[in-house]
Length: 155
Image 1 (cartoon, rainbow, N blue to C red):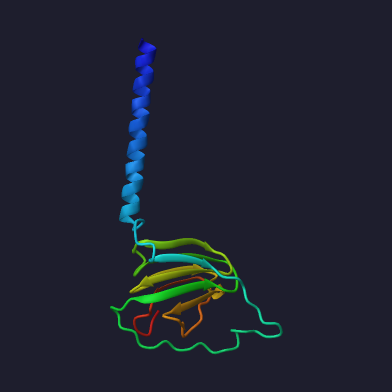
Image 2: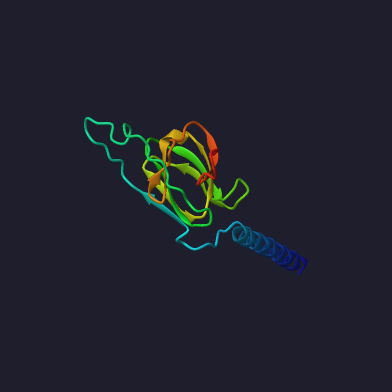
């Protein structure tokens, strides 16, 4: 009888621990924006396109961005065109909720609708970043951490 009671108590303790862990996971997801709308973050894999005998997209000068109002929602498209890139995207600042974190493989893209995003990237030269369909005025280089769209002359 003592063996049965000990086994039942152990199972109840285990169930309690599992319930606490599940509750912690749900609260963490909620606080980090994990239950957001599915339109907020979309992953799209697009195949690489090459044009024989040309450096398509590499010779053209980047187009300067038009003035943007700070309160407007923008469509951000972050595409790994030239190779893999480690990427962290957060809501508005370095302390904002994580929207994407991981290796963005060559040919993959992240699309977000936000007012502003904080972007940290290794091998940033592999990325093309478009805001409302317009490329950044200056191409990204090296390892970067910046807020987009840029607010003023410094990024």
